Length: 118
Image (cartoon, rainbow, N blue to C red; front, side):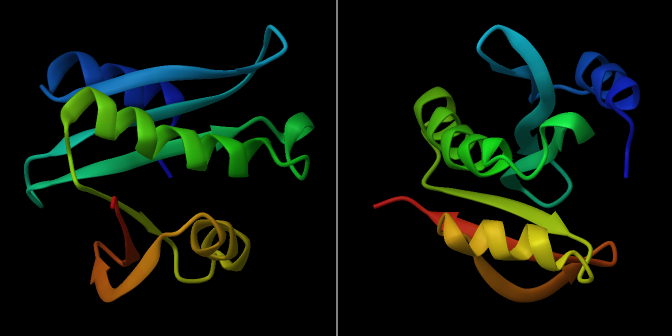
């Protein structure tokens, strides 16, 4: 898992990535990075992190619902990908709950998921 600091540096030196703080009631509770993955040639929700103190409160699920919508609005994309460790049962449950479907494909040892917009 890449650190937030590495993600920030990556967003500065590689075109196409957007970084944002995730907030709740004025409190910084997480971080996300999303954009165009040149290597795979798709729009990707590349990073999402919710601070340990705010986990298991539904904030990650809310963010994972909102970020693809912002990507659709910002980039005009029709689909968004994300990948996760195949052992991340909690993450895969949340991704499925918000509409991501497994592509039954691995990318860099992570399982690939996709959501398609109507």
